[in-house]
Image (tube, one colour):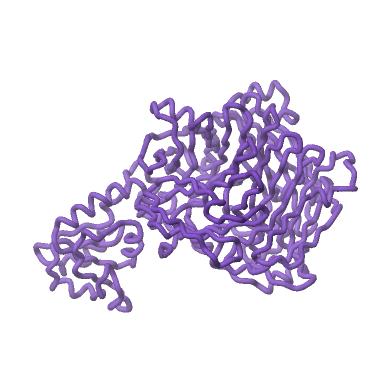
Length: 636
C-alpha cells in the first residue's frame, strides 16, 4: 500500500511535517525515542493535530505498548489513533500509562493546556524530541515553517571511472538571504551514512559545486554509488533546493546531465522508456526514508496496462537499488514506456541507459493523481491562441537526430489529443504533425527527420524547435499536464541524450488557473531568470533559448546573458534578441571571448535574465570526442 501521508499539494505546496518527520537527523532521534517508549511500559498518545498517523508511516512502533489514545477535536473521538479508539483528552486523568506522547512540534503550549489533566506520575514527551539542531534551521518562529526544510536528494556516484558533480548558486541571495549553509549527508548503496559535512556560501550569487571525486578524496572513501541528502539553511524566497547534475566518465566517452530530484515523493512516475534492441535501461530507486521499503510495495507496468510487476525485494532506508526494466517487464521495447508505482517511497528517480558503449542518464517525471480532464482547456484557443505549449529543441539535423515521445503524466489521462509544430529560429511554423487522439498506452514517437526533410538547411543550419500543443480538431479531452520525452542522437558517434518536461501557457497577459506560471508571485509569469552552469576544461557549453508565445508578445526578447565568477562577481554581459515564437542556439565559446572566459575561470556560470518575456531553456555540454549532454534548465 502507498504511504498515506501527503508529501506535496499543488494547492498548498510541500508538507513541512513530512519533511520534518522523515528527516535523516530526526530519524536518528526517533530511534532513541522509540527505545525509551518501548522500555517505559504503557504509553498513551495525545494527537491534537492529527499528525500521529503521518509519523507512524515511517517508523516501526511495534515495540511500544500504546494503550490509549486521546484527541482534542470532538469530531475525532472514536477514530482509530495508534490502534485505539480515540478518547476525548478530558478523559486523560483516568489514564494508567507511564508516558504521554504528544504528537506535535512546538508543543509547549499544547502540553500546558492539558498539564492539569495528567496523572501525577505521568511523564510526557513530544515530537520536539526529534528536532534537528538549531544551526540547520532558518526560522526560529515555527519549527514547521517550510523554509526550515529546504531539502533535496541527489544521485551521487564516484565509481569505476564515473563521476557526478552538482552545480547551483546562492540564488536565495536575490531574495535577501545572506550566507547560506548546505548540510550534507552522503548515503552509500546500503543506506549507511558514509560522510557528513557542511558547506557555507558566504557570497551573494556565489557558485555551489559539489564534486563526487572531491568528496571521495576528502573523506578517504572507496568507490561508491548512493545519494546525497541536501539541507539548506539561511535561505529566503525559495524553499526548494534546485541544481544541475553532470555525470561523466574519465574516458570522455560518456556524458549526461539531469537536474533536481523534486523533493516530494509521489505515488507514481511516468516517462520511463523501454530499451531499444541492444540497450539496457536501469532505474535507480533510492529510498528517501529511514525505514525499509517492504517487498511488494513498488510496481511497474507498461503505460496504460493493468498488469503490474511488483518488486519482490525490500530496500533498506536511504539505500540505492539498480533495477533492470527488461527483467521487470520482459518484451517491452522502445518506444514503449513504463509506469512506476512508487507508493511515495522515493523522490523522482533517475534512469540510466547502457549497452550502446556510451551510457546516458535522465529522470522520470511525477505523475499527478489530482487532475481530471477539463473541458475549459478546449476553449482557451479563443483567447489564448496556442494555449499550452511544450517546447523542445530540434538540433541541427546534419549532426543530430531529434525524437519526441508524448508521455501520459496524470492517472486520469486516457488520451492525448495533440499536434507537433516545427518552428524555425525566426518563429515561423515550417511543418506540422498531427498525432491525433493518442491513447494512454500508445507507443508513437515522432522522428523530426520526417518534418525537417525537404525543408533545406537554410541560413540556420536546419535547427529550430518543436512545440507540442493540444489539437481538438477531432475532439478529445485534456487536463493541461502535457508531457513528453525528447531524445537526441549523434548520427556520427551514436551518443545520445534525453530530457523530459511539461507544457505551460507562455507570454500572454491573460491568466487561466495558475498559468502563465510564476515562480514567486501570482501569475502571469512574464519574465525570465535561468541558471546555466558551464563546462570546465575542454568541455564547451551549449544552450538553446526558446521564446514560446501562446499569443503574440513583444517582437523580440531583450535577453541578458550575464557571465558570473564563482564568487558571485559579474565578469561581463551581452544581449540576445530572439524573435517572438523563435529560438537561439548558442555556445559559451562563441558568445564570450577567450579573455572573458579566462577571467571567469572555473566555477563560473551564466544568469539568463529577461524582464520582457518568459523563455524556456535547454543546456548541455559538448565533449571533444562526440560525447554530449542535454537537459532543460531551471529558473528561480
